[in-house]
Length: 401
Image (cartoon, rainbow, N blue to C red):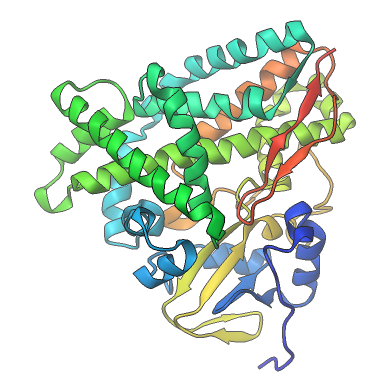
């Protein structure tokens, strides 16, 4: 057993929030298992993170006191105990089976033309102006509009829903800052009331949206396998959040990366067929979600140490995606990189249900810029949105002239 005390990883260190990748490299070089917060161990190497994402000795379900420590007392506690993200089999299996039916390839494909139209509506005026902000003008409004359409949120309500979505994102940090907790709890309470109202409307008149699909799937199931009304509401809220947060970060980081790497931008212009591999490279290069956590149920061996039950393993997806043992020259952006088995959508039974939709939105947004903008250049300094869990921006100014 290794007796040397491992490095300590502070996820709230300003250096980590600014640019975590040099620090990730130190963690990997030191053995791949580091100390985190109270009761936490941090895993940074690909060959450890990838199998742990599928390891049944690790749990997604946390006791209520864990959530109370992380976010304080309020509606978000019961929310996290119901959503698919934090459930194990058999409850996770039941939830995923019903939600997968609602999130069918047919429903996602139906959104393709809608997404293309939305990108054009957002960017055509920007092309006339000669500039736009990749976050406020594209990366945020596009996924929010798409997920509202997918869920079935009427267009007249979307300006009401958007600020609640921003506050809900605060609840998904590994540790929620005290100043953010009230807003996160209020967002859950407001969204629960709003989605419950929409659910009642759909039960009376089904449509062709995700809410209607979930109701139809729920009715078709055996009574013991059905979702409760509370489970449907909370999981629709979660899908709403997951449907925009990851994609917002993907689009913003993709544009920012292309601005910093003009040679790769020129390569994409010359060969637009590389767009699908480029989107996966952006997902690897600056993962929208940097970390996920698991509760240890049985002893596991990581980095020469035994991690005991009751501890939390923080799996650094962003670090695994830059592991030089898996990805040649990992700090280099390569829009044609293949193979590219990044971990940005997780793995195993909890692999992201919305991965296909996120890729469609990313390709649509970048494809429009490649086809229609003769020149993409930085129009000012980018501004990061500091987050322990997400790699995101507040502003990415772009010149299209």
